[in-house]
Image (tube, rainbow, N blue to C red):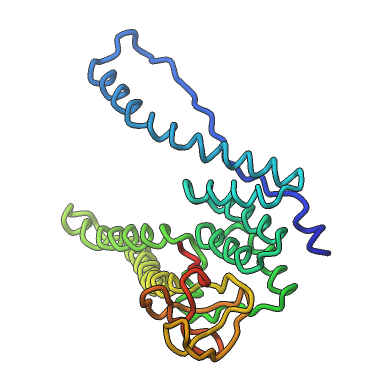
Length: 273
């Protein structure tokens, strides 16, 4: 399969929702309920207004992509992702970036799509295809960072908190409420504790993996010191993975799979931005 065939159509992943209303069972609606509905509608109105430009930009990107205006699609998808980050939008941004020949930006967009949604199989396939076509290495991850890729970032936080409190409740509540302890209480508590212990290294992996990024520009000079006149120690290709160590002014100290040095900020992008 060629790159032209693979990225011929965008992934239309714009989520749509339909609002439904129910007729109240009683003719008289309590005043508190009316007040609650009014406050909720007022609070949600700005959210709907803010989401409209994001949806319009997404549709504009899909339309321009289909007619072959890939540069216009890049602008639309990028602005849509800036206003409302979404895995599908970032995947389409990667497809458009690949079409205009920006390998580094395309790989970064697909990595960001997988950061938000590790279950996005299409983005994963696009990323694998691009790395194979451009002969790029994958980031080197520690075991706890690999675990952190299994679920979306927010899921690990929820799982850690929920599993810990459920385990504590299963252990403490039977004694407090004078319930007879059952075998399933202990089994469920042990399972919740296992989930908590699994989520802790995954959460650490999220923190360390957030410093991973990619080289955006082709033939990027890796400098020995963070100055324009510094000696170049290597040249990096667009899409090459690296890990941010620290920043200084307009430069970023990165560590690649081969060496370490400084690049300009605009030449490096983080996968969790």
